[in-house]
Image (cartoon, rainbow, N blue to C red; front, side):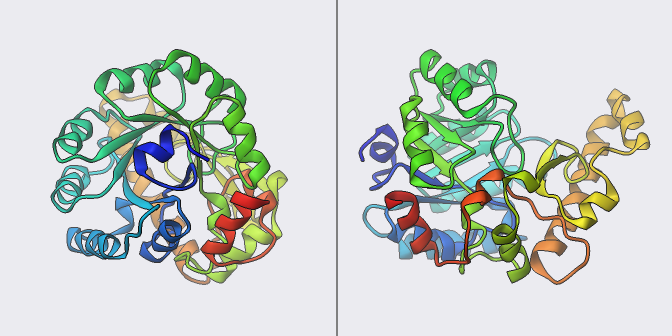
Amino acid sequence: MQTRLTQLLKIKHPIIQAPMFLVSNVAMVTEAMKGGIAGCIPALNYRSLEELRAAIKELKANKVEGGSFGFNLIVNKSNIKYKAQLQVICEEGCDFIITSLGSPEETIIQAHAVGIKVFCDVTDLRFAKKVEQLGADAAIAVNNEAGGHRGNLTPEALTRLLNKELSIPVISAGGVGCKADIDTMLSYGAEGVSVGSPFIASIEAGVTDDYKQACVDYGAEDIIMTERISGTPCTVINTPYVQKIGTKATWLENLLNKNKSLKKWVKMVRFSIGMKATENAAKKATYKTVWVAGPSIEHTKAILPTSEIIQNLVNN
């Protein structure tokens, strides 16, 4: 199936394997490219710029015709590594960058200068129009069924709205776990889809088997919102530990967030603490199970190779 997304990235199928903190890695994206889709890794998955540079070199060596790869950048002040990460990505090269949680202006300017396309996460029309004006190559419409940080509008409402108002391609993110979901998103006017949660339970994913099995054992009704990870509402699996710690910000955090001079620092601290907790749960056995996922795990029935997950998305 050919769409503007497949043409932009020269891929066989209009699917982006979404960037997932701690989950995405070179092995997953390599298999994504072999399967004819695009794969993306958060730059924050790498502790050092040297590791990021090495990953880009490996992906370039692994690239095959019909697939493409990119990186996700958190472009707000909470990510103090952002500018250095952008510089490395532009120096080494990739097919695309996905920006999140901030203004993409600097990324668009630098990436376009070296031939890298830029897609921007958006949750509403106002920001979507802004990134289009800045020169984004596509808008990733993050709807209310996305895993992790999600939007407020339904897949249909957000996709139809952006498709009507924008001239750049709209890629629907959230609520896709099978081929029927992809067909539905395309019927709303999307030029492709961004799929994350189904790939958590892949053999190649860089997380524990417990995390992967949780995506098999739990379903859509087990996904809840929490403010305890990054300071911004985020979807997680409703494990006993999540129930124990609660899902709302503490009274102290709420108080400090009202102070304009302290708000940025409070968010940075909460982001750091939350990401560390998420990393511990994803990477090693622990009772503190904070597992990020979206409702599309409803379709996850087994831990499978990435290649098989792609075939299920394309054919079933």
